[in-house]
Image (cartoon, rainbow, N blue to C red; front, side, top):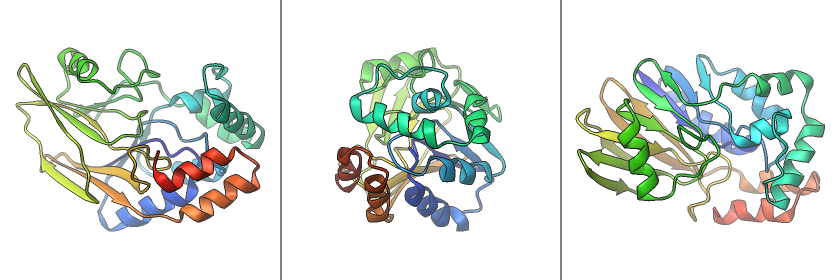
Length: 246
């Protein structure tokens, strides 16, 4: 089966449209979303509406989804993030708020094939950045692949027995074969707010028949996304960072 693995759209409609347009020829059989539909950018309703049209869809919640839905306060967010979620709460429709509220918490197993989480299997808000944290997840996972989001940073951690290695996809199309004799912890990067100094939208295609993963980067209309952020009178930083991918 061919899966679109994507994460952290953060209300960026232009980026999501670009991704879905790109994968239209890929014969995607299932859409798997790793959390954070909303927050930061200026199209929360439009992004949720579009996401809900994708069939079949497996989606889990992210920390921004929880705050916009009113499940958590967001007191631990920085000022820009707090302003964005406060604005989104005022904009979001009742139907879309209900959709966010009903999103599942990770981890969940997809098709008895792989595991998905937002941040960490034990704490959906935890950022996995270190080899130590990656090894802990892999040591405790019964699944050969765990897909995670939250960091906005594409990376593949590979555990071969007690050894851990890392792959950093730094090209527009990075494809590799996977071995079921190993374990993998894979972040597809962020659709709507990349932070690895590459402003292009990031996502992954996983083929469970061929056992391959492809992480792709594509350009999108950043200027339009920025103009909407300005029009909504959200913090300038949320617009400017899109140009530099940080």
